[in-house]
Length: 420
Picture 1 (cartoon, rainbow, N blue to C red):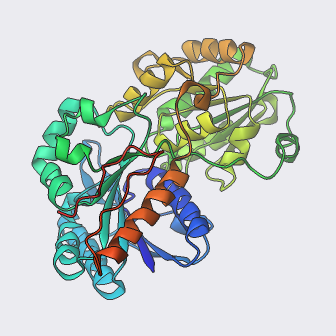
Picture 2 (tube, one colour):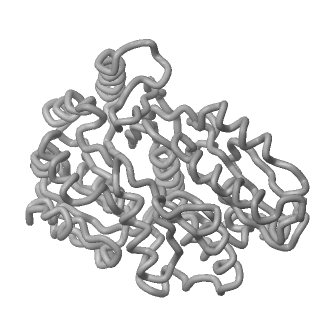
């Protein structure tokens, strides 16, 4: 049995990190399955893969200042690069014949690169289940409607996909209501909960000892992948210098720039690091989640994975969300702040002074409530695995019978996954 995951990975590290968390749980819960991921991530090699998993690297993409896709490294137009990615995806599916394809976020793929493969599966591999993994929030509803109309996403969800896994909580954001999804699409939706993380094996004390802290407080600062995180990190370093100068702060700072930050900007931040400011700067660490759980406060942008890791570790968080080219991070931060789970500074109000005040308030206050205690579930990977096993079972039964599958008691799901 083969499960294939598609993670387009054009901007940041969120997609591959979420996909790998899901793949790890799939590997553990379906021991007879092999997994393979199609990914454009530049950092795919840096992560430990689950057992029985391989990945196929797609040419990397990024976004320009206007939010348009472009080749990250290849000296070719986006059309040529996408055509190459499209052929790699199609040949991979044609030759490997997966039993299930789990697509992260982009129903048609980047610039429609998945469409030939989806049509091939529909006509040549009718028993293969096609599933979309939908992030909790895509964008402001007006932007989503326009983008989905342009890309033909709604007909795809209606006619091509067998199920839609929502990696979020309906109590935080309900895509059926916000995006006005049809009843036919709603029946395919499975609300899985946020894809959280298991706690590190090492204790908080052991992790902090490894960091050689100079104080008894640790602030972790990270923009995620780092492509557009420089303004936040620059403001933070300026805050340290203005507030403390040669006087040592009352807290240590571990600042992780992200591997995708421009090297010149990264160098400026690294040059600011010194013992007097109790500031350590690094570009990337696979142990980021360990450090996050050991911190007293996390200052970050509002990407899905970082937010979920803050929630999973019951951590204090100050979020400065991205607002261009999407409002997804801002909406997520606003909704979770309203539930008392974190604090937010709108990027237009970010200054060294507002940041210092927010940090002081947060460090002096209690930790937020546990998200699970207020109805925000973090067991998304486990629910994804259960739903995948059910879909795979349906696919096998469809070879011999038309018997419908039963509705799981713990998931919001249609009485049957309709094959369209």
